[in-house]
Length: 103
Image (tube, rainbow, N blue to C red; front, top):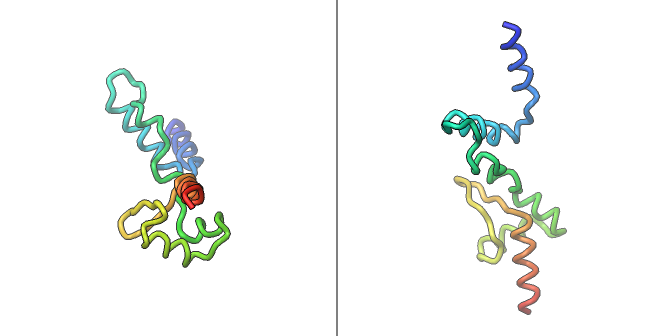
């Protein structure tokens, strides 16, 4: 029973945003014969660096409505997750820098 409590303490210590990565790593260890995680398991989850329109607007110093308008116009790169739109800050900043060079 003590072993189970130690596992529960470890599980409770995992931050909520890291749970997908932990599950991926654990499943990779179960699937592989050699016990080593697959390369995908070492990669952070795809959603770890995504932000919403308000957070992106705060980073850029513009109103959220501008971010949404530029997204609908196809000028800002975004990621659709179901009905939600999220942004990778590095991709958005690179697109804006490229746009500035083209003018």
